[in-house]
Amino acid sequence: MTAASPTIVVVGAAAIDEWYAVTNIPEPDGGAYASEVTTAAGGVGANVAVALDGLGRDVGLVSRVGDDAYGRRARESLDSTGVDTARVRVGDDPTTRSVILRDPDGERAIVTAGESFRKLRLDAADREAIAAADVVFLTAYTPDEVSRAVLRTVESAAADDEASDTTSGPPRLVFDLSGSIEELIGRGTEPETIHRLLHRADLFVAGDVAAAAYFGGREAAVRRIAAAQATREGSPDARTSNGRSGDGWPRAVLTHGADGVTVVTDGERRSFDAFEVDAVDATGAGDAFVAGLIDQWIAAAEPVAPGVRFAAAVAAINCQSRFTQPGLPTRAEVEAFLGERGDRGDSGFDSDRRDGR
Image (cartoon, rainbow, N blue to C red; front, top):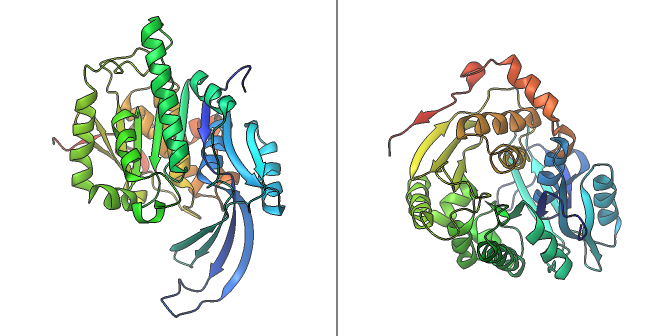
């Protein structure tokens, strides 16, 4: 990666998910019975990287796993893809893994363990790869010290780009606030760093749970995001998207699962529905959706509505398979899915609803 950095660098966990198909999600002091237990490769970082690889993007992963059976399983899974794993290091700590309880109605409870990713730190080669990339993605589960290092690296690259007056632009930054603040304390990105990322990211993504915990609710999130976008207008780093200006950057997306998404760009809110499909497993659909946005908006500079539609199709296809990574589609599969549903508004997808606020 140091010789020829991938177009996209993902910083995130490569983990193993242990799935328990339970009769119910236990209440405090309650119990449940698991009729099936299985394992699958997961982790937000690996999910996004594998999804982008499936869409044909040149992508590398910066991560850390343990020297144990879980770590070997995670690396073997990545080795079966085209993801560049040169920056996935192996440590002595237990590999990050999640226990996922899923009831017959699809409700879930997730418990994560393992120190391997939490102890990731960037070295000079990692920072070099990030600075040379076109796009950098990181999740809020990234340790705060690493998130700050990524931010410093991107900002330094932007300053170097400004000084040299080049047209290539610094790395475009995508940040996914993928967990509640309470869940992240001592493990992931801290609120102060999230604030800086909100004001610096080219694309900021948050699910309902994370948005409620950090912003105080959906409406508060829209207001604060619009204000953060306003601070970027006319600033020296406004050309972070390879010199583009006036095309709705930066952007933010609030995801609502089956209820669609809210996009905030140029201080304006626009709503989009999700595709209606027979969902088998929605775990990881958010990661698939983010990968679709990166593919369309950041790597290909597509307009808002077509980009959301493509990303929604990636997520919808992923929902129709068990586990995350086995169900991630290729570009041809996404295009076929969209082709079957026509150009606009078919099969439960409303391509653009403006709320006027």
